[in-house]
Image 1 (cartoon, helix red, strand yellow):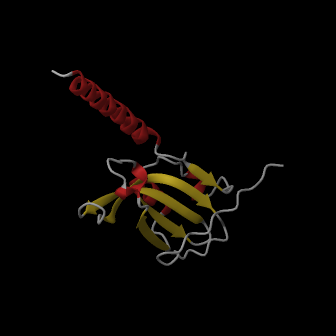
Image 2 (cartoon, helix red, strand yellow):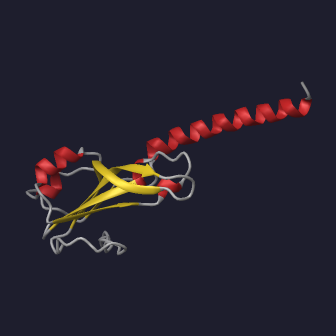
Image 3 (cartoon, one colour):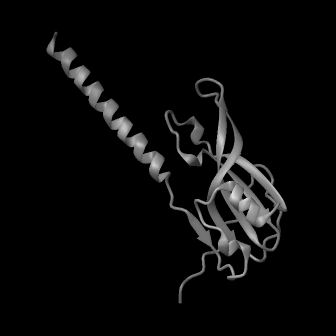
Length: 153
């Protein structure tokens, strides 16, 4: 075997090990840490929600939302990315707030023409308590207003 082929083989093997380790780390961390905003009163149902809670538990606790929307984040285009944050489902509750769920996706198509369809919500990603919430989901293409973070005095 020629030395150049051996070096290429070793380099390819090392690259595959590094890629495997990176994918395993991405699956654990998934980017940003879970978010909880607003100070929900202790007797509020929103106070009982925690990031990581299963979808069925959260819906059993809160009930049917006023409105909802689901969307893909665009991360389905990243080759070999299997993180939970490829799609989200947002549930809007009037005068209570917004709950954001990680959502499974169905990806179809080839190459750069992949299409993404949000499938089934899996667990709570973010909880945003806001007693002034209108309960109406933004239209497609619009972003949800970012919650105001209260500064500690």
